[in-house]
Image (cartoon, rainbow, N blue to C red; front, side, top):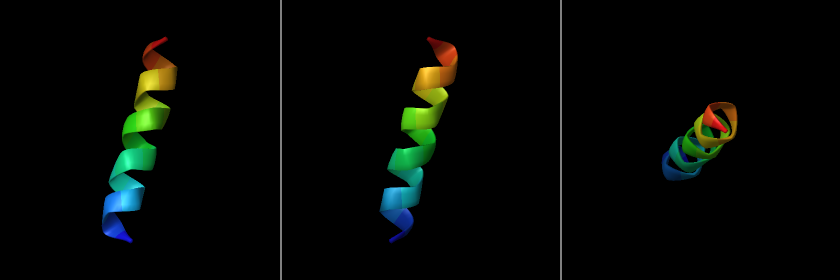
Length: 18
């Protein structure tokens, strides 16, 4: 489940960049 965490982190980062 480490990949899911990485994807989630990327999504959160993308939302923050928005």
